[in-house]
Image 1 (cartoon, rainbow, N blue to C red):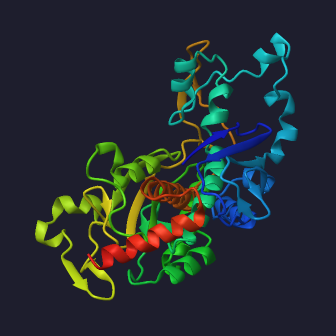
Image 2 (image 1 turned 180 degrees about the vertical axis):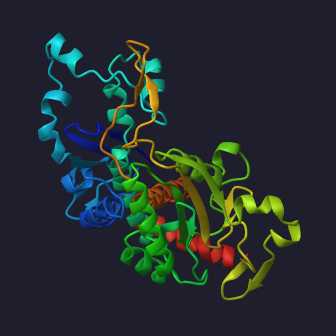
Image 3 (image 1 turned 135 degrees about the horizontal axis):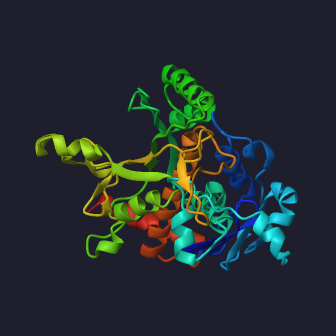
Length: 388
């Protein structure tokens, strides 16, 4: 299974093509819209999210509520395009008009300068429009399709905020999946800690007043993945590595860890590795989950716990210094509309990116031309490993 996205931040639309889905899988467009709405929310979001009403249009691959087995086409219109038609339209414009609108001052922390150097763009709008985090709406749409596939296999996933601006949520690690979903959906910053929630919101407001931005840490939890998904055989088939890479591909993410993660460097092995136990009803399980549901590049059957680190958004309303690529003179970097903090939205993006990788790994391992055959194969596998 794979997907491809197309579109620019202020272009006509975002398009996602999903290929490789099983046929006859129940498909609910409203579940995709729910995910897109969640991505748009969160305390600290900027004015762009007040303009857009992200709703998906299905242009192919689905009929009467079920997938056909052919590529699924998902389209999200950019409502703001009507204000950008002259700037982002595909038709040629006069050279003097083109020069007048050229962006030649790269913003520190963005893809502007590196992308201009790579592709030879003298107008860096050609870079920033595609490198914008607006593209994550298309990725959430793809991940929402993957979540529907997982839910039909008894696998649930949720993303929530762990830390914002150095303020870390404190919550009971024994919270059920349902409780985590409810708490994160009710929180303006998608956290599970009501006390930390207020402090996080205050920190976001303070950064906004100062023309600055703050980052944080997002956590995703998955329940229901059977053991043995992934591979120890080849480096590029290790599922935790693939998830880690997908997290790092999200705009502004700079790190990922599973379970205790980097803390393991400070602990003894006896305090890190998860002891194995067995019960007739559920088969093998771990007495703890310090490794976050992975060993040897494969799932252990325990809940998957993975964190992602998001840096502060680099677009600042008190811009940093840069250099004009035409005059080579120092200037304050250009300003595009932005958020003071997008960590709550990033929790939704990371949730859907992880969902995609899990769904893809399952389809690689089990027959899936028909969705019912996939369900039957995974049910049989669950029983096989329970009795192993």
